[in-house]
Length: 556
Image (cartoon, rainbow, N blue to C red; front, top):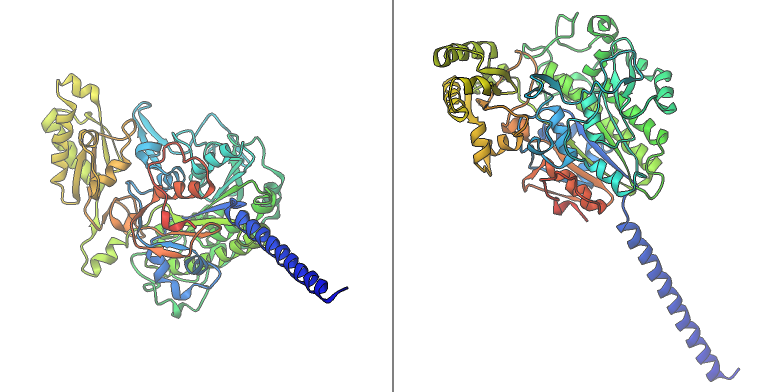
């Protein structure tokens, strides 16, 4: 071949090679972009019951790399995240996270509330039209029928023509029922006492699937019938108070609230398997069951997005018993950190790194034990509702000649009997205001609002804004009151929650995984923003009662 022809041939060969490589690179880029833009195989929602935001910072030096710190270092941290309604309880918390709305819209105004139509108290998840499944007890008849709007899990099911699965898991029934929504393939909760099994209701299925019966039959639960001692040397637990204080409650049969807690010896006196709920082992059991669900339900195995909702409930039981400053709480979060790492590792292995999206938040936060605050010269105290009601009844007799004008007193609300008010030829709004002014005189009460104000005003910030978001016109009461900061209606030991005060509203919110940026923000975010953020990431419709908005900085 002539030299000139050879040179031309080589040039053409090189050019062809460049074109081929360029085409291949473009193809690889397109595939990478397509993969990046595709929906995650699985969304995992994690709710830690009664978790204050400052647990993330308070215990950070003790957390390992694979749990909370994995989310903090490689995910997105919303540092100024709040519940924007009250009361701050478990039922409304889970409903608000998953509906993207507040009780004013979704209707779950408390764990239990006075039903104005039925004239009695009702439980947020109870439904006697269904049967218990997986237990001999008839008390576990549950469904989400009182939640009046869709959840992000419902919208995902609708978007995928019911091909995407939703599985919800929690020790507490309401911690599984609300996240599962109306269309869940399964919602499971733990029945303790003398059984120690994961159960459900006939709203979801008529019998437990094989993987659940296998898990129950394995008696994994019995491996947690053991002593609860500290994970690390107790002398290193300097982020919490003394081990033996007057601010902590006791297990039945204990003399002091101190480590180690001899769970086997305390078993029978504390309702058998129910005692595990009050230990970190309840969270470990929840993690075990959630990991089993990944294989049992084949979650995240195809291109159709599934949803796994997990609620860790033991943190709430332990906070209520021992308080937010206890050694027990510190140990619980160090152990939860390990359980989270186990869940994350299972997701990496079974779904794939970079193939799932996860968020972690709480259903409410909690207050320091008021007795502890008072002993440290911080204004705090206790409201004795029995005394408050007695004082109010004296006023009602004097003003109206009867106490029957108040039908119910619950969840920091008064429900009035409108028929009696009408028979007395009085205006409901006037009676509301008169009673509100009386209650405002009581030392433990900080603020009072009436239903008339909730109807006629549009609040945009502060306590009234939070109350209004929690006020449901069909279900809420006539007079709403707020206890003074630092004051709770609870026993003298352990922590509680429920108020619109910042110690009950400031909760963590972390996002991690596919489609999520690394970073943080101190811009205020609110609990109802979670669902529309996930919906935007998935490219699906918002839940139909959504009042929150997508958190833009979170999304890639």
